[in-house]
Image (cartoon, rainbow, N blue to C red; front, side, top):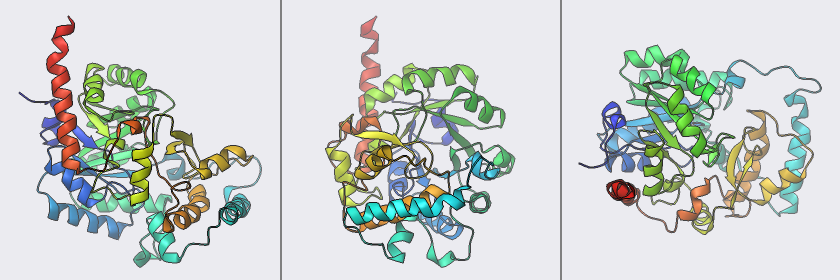
Length: 376
């Protein structure tokens, strides 16, 4: 019998391999490719407008008849409103930060991006110019209404607690997942009714935890009782999958492994940055979203390390960073806009079809698990 756990039965998939719902990367064609290969593709809908979410869901359904998921963000700090702090508000400080970004662009020879380039980088749907601002509370709530209405097979909260929507999703037969980076958060989402929990360690790309995956996964498993856990963070091949299973996880949530695939929504120079990267090539920075995220090192992350400016909270920091990223992306500046990746980046050697990546990871995990008894 091949690689199979309880997660496969819950999600209706062949292998316990789940594509992380990475914004800008996990586009419909990649989602469908992973699902068709026997895993679960998860659409990265973080910045997608309600209209775009509907279109992407329809596109995924046109490309696969297998289960898939949609990932969005539910940051508690945004949903409950900005907390008052001493000094000027983020809105009052925004011009100063935008000036910093403009000076950076001038030093690097970048010009202001076109409205189209900026919208593309920020994931903004220009057809809904009168909609709520991206990453605002109203934006997140509008997204969730669409996802409930669309009867999606799986919903994944990439950030925050999906508790307020669990009952509505459950009434539609939607499996609910939540990504956490601490045991206390795992307990919270378990109590809220999440069907699956992703324990993502510090090693992972994008928004992650201050705790390493090796320590986080077993502690989350111990804390949430019978709720199945997916391991994440630095897992890029079959060895990592086998290790996560030995730590008590019943599947994995993989992002970096799929960055350099034919179907990933990255630009060619960004896929090249992944291939050329190594285990030392990333850093945790708040310079893009305002929240800690593991990014590929760049001149932009370095500039923020050297400044005295404290990154603004979401949604204000993206207003600072997105014009820079859009300008850099439009001219292929790998040194400024290489993207996000986990510390397993050094294991990615070439651009390949997503199905081939799934097959190799599964085969590698199965081989290691078959050989494990010889260690006793």
